[in-house]
Image (tube, rainbow, N blue to C red):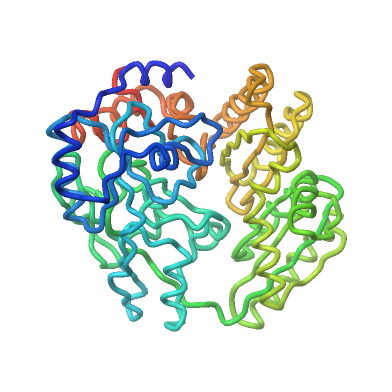
Length: 471
């Protein structure tokens, strides 16, 4: 990771004059304590902590704008922070600077049930939003597992288990309020269902990982709560049988709400962590949304396809508490997998390929992990061709880490050769910068760099992420 070493050589000192002005503006909401800096200098990635020099807690868009104007004047790096659940080093202070924590910007500003939209401050989490709108008969479906903030989810173009039916943050973000790198406040888009008016600035900032501006408000799509929900699990003798079941289900047009793959290692970890008794074989976890009859018909088709692919133990979970238990276990998978090798650190990565190439990509990646002798698990939102690999390594053994990074590099190369992408939902951050060049080519990267230079000419917005500043 030479770009990390190079970027840290460019660490910029934070002037005392800036800290004094921020103290006057934010009072006790400016902290330079080691504990606060350490908390904000790490995420769920495998990287060692990289601490900011200070942390500011903002309450309003106007406060964020005032903060950015000061940092711009002193050319000091800014790192936006939501809940710290990212997996690719997005919130690490690579060049020092000041973290702006948006978690206290947590108000739901407007809910428009008749238009199926809600507008929230960036610090509102997905669970908080769903709790506040539960009586409207609507829900927000994007579910990356962690109870992430909506601002962070927009910044990383998050998706998750429901993406196969409801899409990602890209499709479900209508408008943003953004503080630009010079401290101006702009609004992108409207709540209208469609628009042909000018550049699509919403899509410029969605997925920009805080490198172009700070998202402070988000307007998202809402959906009617389904009349009926049903879940089912079934096991397979091989990962190939499980993945082929998903491919055939998608190809015949069954509108799955969710379908998750866990290989046998993932099932073993969940059994131990959540005290389940699932067969230790590759497993698919399905969820169906719709009318009572529609859900029943969908499930019958899927069960038939699964049986044709050697499925066993097709079981229903129709009670809400049973479904919740299964999905809670699935969302705990990252922490459950760490217990497969106590004391280890997880190197977690993902890719996404066209559904027709999914089985090939998963099987070759799993064979690679086994050939390297890595304790690992493969878990995937396989309905949209996206899967994750979690490899447990000894952080003090460079050879062990190198094995996992080698698997990651070969997986990404494999996915790109299949017309896929280096990341379906983790984002680029620090970990996948080189892969971005491999995926898009020098010409497209030059265009991205031109956008970065134009919108952030002082390179203060989360510097060192996604792109190198220089060629």
